[in-house]
Image 1 (cartoon, rainbow, N blue to C red):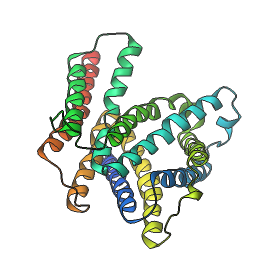
Image 2: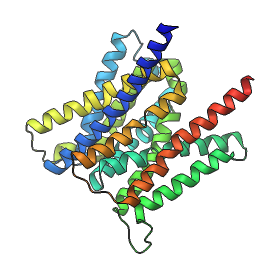
Image 3: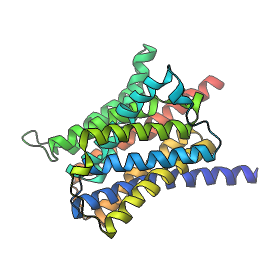
Length: 306
């Protein structure tokens, strides 16, 4: 019994650590945008290509058959769609939102994917939304409105492009979460992730041609990119996935909310971003959807088992 409790606490710690590493990775990205000449068009192809290779090496070391998904005529088109519209699109919109706004706003907007996933499930099951689902949608709508306008319809409080990228991140993060499920079951988690990043990075490189962007290669850029790739991608994903295996997806999803909370704290204390009471209200309303949906689903599961 004591060992079970220790294992669960280890899962909590891993899930929280994964969320915090994602937040720090986003903050490092904002720092590089502010102090270097790089843009999202440069960062995303480089990050995805290197991280994709590393994930495939980890998959090979773990005994996965890394080429099986590419040899499958049935799964290769699905892998390509996941890589482009899931991995590459979600990462690009996330960092573009950081570049044109800040890491806190981008991270919180990304968490609207919880509601997009819920809405997709409602349409797929062809049923009416439940009370907690309706409440979650209202929280997101009011929260985004508060962040974007500060309840003043005469102007935006953030760049319209940043707002579009934030909402795009929520939609594409939904694709990134839902689309690879069958692929992972058949071909392995690390292999699918690795190929998704590698193919997505290749498409991004062809579109944005990072070699034409003059990056100032110095110590901060090298160390920053190293952390974004290793800490904010490899370690963050590994910790989070291991954590939810120990505590379950519902608890893991709630604990991963340390990412936007950490992003807000880092933005205020380290990056010097100034937020208004309307921003914090919007953040709270959007993040409230995570425990709201988790508690509602948990009660449904308990009711089914009784």
